[in-house]
Image (tube, rainbow, N blue to C red; front, side):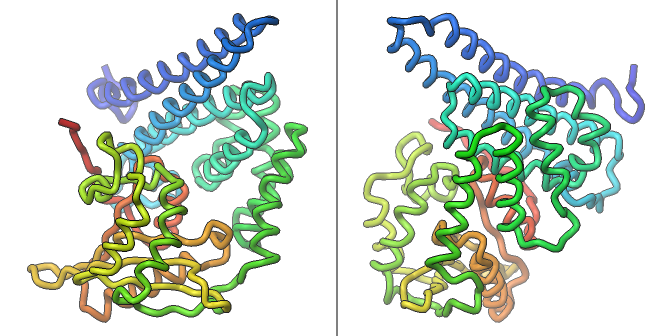
Length: 376
């Protein structure tokens, strides 16, 4: 038997992926119920344990959703911008995209409920609002929110995404202004002032103390002269983000044995690697005070049948991530690769590094493969 446009065989992987994600989401619900059962006077230790368990279960469910997205990169690229160069069946594309967004919304609803019962702190919930915003960036989601998704969720989740739908998604505002507006609307919808303060504080730091245009920075290629300074800049930023880890970092010995955390002496290793670049070229951006504001490392491979460059690392000061500096670094790396007659520029990104994925897609990069690994 076949559903219109799909055979049963074609549907089975989608059903299995959805069932796996559903299982994790159900485990989150079980954790919440256990929290309530153990939250009477005299059970403070159990409450802390259950709160910790809820965080872990949310993280696991999030990773499962990120994995689903990575496994269906073509469908998600279509959902983001409507591109379908291979002319895949639209019914299948819609089916996969809908599964992804239902999984996201189910998890968002659980997170919202946990915030209301004070299992999730407001500051932590505020970080989830970034995921809400990035979901709204998908054109397919916006086209189907009111007609397909909305009625399945609680009034609070409806209010959040209704507010997001009022933003000017067709242009006119820079991303930082859009995000600030969205955070303010969500704070009002869920009656949580901490959410608006969380985003406004980030914006205020950038507005008051940092440059706000790529023209405010100077750029120079470095061959190891600034290795120690660059390591001091990069290590604390990258080391605070386990989601940055991908197979390259594991292969280079920059992570712990399990590949899920950075080594303790990351700055020392960076200083050593930056000082002995070999064929690598480091682009350094500095602010008007001469301090490093961002770096990018290009590794050209010019000897084989295909000339290409790899963007091995890139990081920007957190307060400058809406100032256009990342785009400026990417543009200069690509320009340098062209000077070297490269045919391609490649990069890799950790599975859960969703913000970076969106950034690279907007910069013109497309996902073309998945990397698999087995720990021995």
